[in-house]
Image (tube, rainbow, N blue to C red):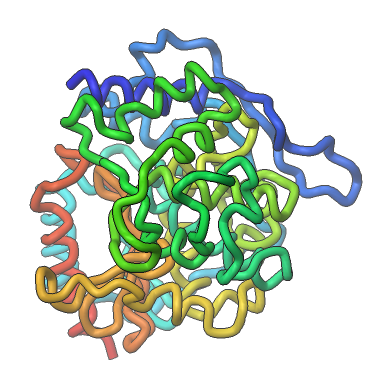
Length: 396
């Protein structure tokens, strides 16, 4: 438990400290209106997210900007309309609503060909409320990586150290940006929250000791365990590195870049909040908040190819199994910070029950947010996947 506490304290400190090398620029007439916000001072013990009670999570997941510092990104000037389509069958609607009540899911939205077929809320969430994303943010960071590729700032074949010189001489020498995106760097990492010596648990130690340099300081000390490109290991630390890499390449925080590369072209109607770390940049591996409808709009944005913001075919590659989990989990795999599922589906996932599932063959987007009883490893996600398959079977 102490390790989890250390990790969560690190998350809290990252969110509570503003400033650093990539703070949002002064807003001129032509600059995106991205604003840094700072909530009232909180007791550190009250910021340990994994130790919030069920009631605290339900309340605070829809108000993270009241607990952590971050960038507020305004809604698109022309939000994308989500016209009504044919509703799902009465039986399937009843099943989805029962599933929501039984699993602590706060909202589910289903779009087919851009039209709304189902929308339901619980846990006090409403259409105008935002809900935190946790690791769904990884797929946003991946999309901003694609935008930086499109903008000529990054190539997937670039060595990581070209964009993060502080990693020179570390195990990241010889690792490409693509290998970072697919979590196949071969660098050793332990994401076990129950292990007090795990890398994810030690994030707090580096934050306290190194402040704005914490991410790079920790990652450069990691040893190599496999040749680059040969072993997949899930590493939140590496998505944080992607965030640093993109911010270094484009010269602005992820949230500011997201304003013109995601929020506006995807037509977000509710704006976006993205927590900052001690550098004044955004946390690439987690911690943005948007409305349920904007989760769905992000899914449409990916499903439709990114409206020229990313290279042609980017999402086809990002949502393809660059790493195949067979035979352990046939049909499942990992792309560029997106999880891949059977029958060509792919999606974004976050702890405690957030997700965006895309079924390209059916033109489907299924977005959901929740407060599940466990951060991960519970039965709820399997139930959502099974429900998604039923929705896909009912789609045209």
